[in-house]
Length: 301
Image (cartoon, rainbow, N blue to C red):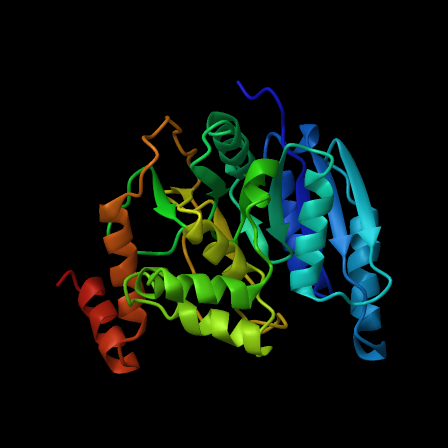
């Protein structure tokens, strides 16, 4: 039994269709009507997107289905990173825990049950920094729940004690990764170039808060809980977002069955890490080899 439902924080900008799909899916969660929803609506960059920004705000201004809906309208455009960092910090100044979504996260009807249950279960486990709702579409079966070192960003939750470990200075994080020789591990043992993503954030080529959240957690040797079946689908990889390119690599199947939670020993699951490494390595294969693999799969080879 969950003693305290976490407030849900939703970050939106200028995508009315995505925001509607995100909210309508969230409303189908049984715990939605008992949960408070805080919406941080970023301001327009200019006249070119003002109408879309207003469409998003108009829609969310009439949303029901939650215990309470509070919208914080940004007068100016803060950008995603600053909006999330300040918004999450603001909520955790008032609450002990939080569930965070962006406007392109379509959730399973069991998302809130899992998130609130896990936030309750691991609230006093210092080694656990966050809970994640999305899992990558690996070909091999994953455990029902498992831990990985670091943190993630597609439908997640944390506690005040966890967010206190967030370090916004990317250059400081990179220096510590180098000094402690953790770059290889940061890159999931070479399967994905997160180090370059952090370097790009430092140089201003991207404005990723998530790469800094991941680095902060890894450097503190903290764990994030993942479900073995995804409770979240990212619908923003359609080139509609400011920071996204079009890709189908991360499309997954949302589970329609609840995730069974039980307390795990706080340590990284090496088998799950290996499975996800293989998944990321497969993304680096030339397109024709990836296509051949999918055709063999379909043929049962």
